[in-house]
Image (cartoon, rainbow, N blue to C red; front, side):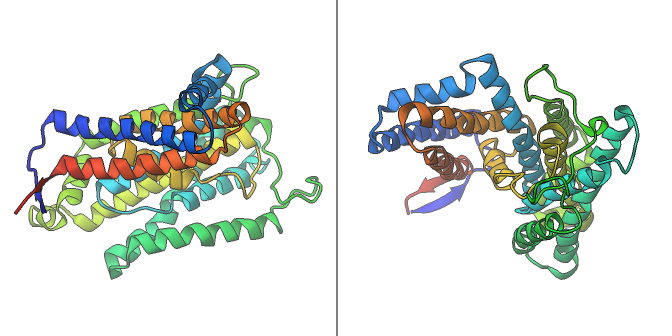
Length: 349
């Protein structure tokens, strides 16, 4: 048995295997629910109802999907050029840090000026943070998987130090969190009384812009060429190292926007548990979307729906919320297998 590359896979093959992977995910989830002692149909119904069964549930799902869209886009952009950015979590936190540093009264400007400045500084900080591993890769050949992954732990420890020291809110009753943002630094709500904010709109705009860049620009073409075959791209005259650096800047900036949107739109202050792993979950989102920027939006809604629905399902069916984590893990593994079968066929010798 061996794998034989498929030079031009058909549309049915591109869509068929991912669809089978999603169906297999739900079947696996049903089996897990049965093992947990619950009715699988009831569990799946409760997940759907908890995520999309009411206007409140839908808005909560959209709210949870917002940072996942940003981190999913960051991963999709980097992976498209085969730059393996595993550090979206660190870039998210640096974006949140810049939002807090400048949004707690240092810049007493109106919202129309302050919010774009906060977003741009967050983008710049995330881009610079990822630029370091990119330079190490292009100049010295250092594996970016290792450096970006280590940056996650390093930066979280750095944030912890700041929250226990200079950034600690003296009015926080001893809790390690920063001071709250001023009102002018808060993203307005899309609907009064609900948590959904205009960060979601920014995420949708970002997805469309990234799609346009990847499909309509020279940079997008160069990123795809570098990702498909780096040596061939260099032989064709494409500046591979420059493309990788530009990819890193774009990816890091997108991940940092997740931190900006979470602080300015939801939390209003920086805490160590700001992200429950949005940077890592963004990898699942990007892979489920097959690295398509518009598909990232759909995949983020799918993943957010599972998380939000699992919370409701757990209370109603007395099933652990870990079922959602297992569903996502199975979905990722099956999607990776589906991508492989899309690009290769199994041949018997």
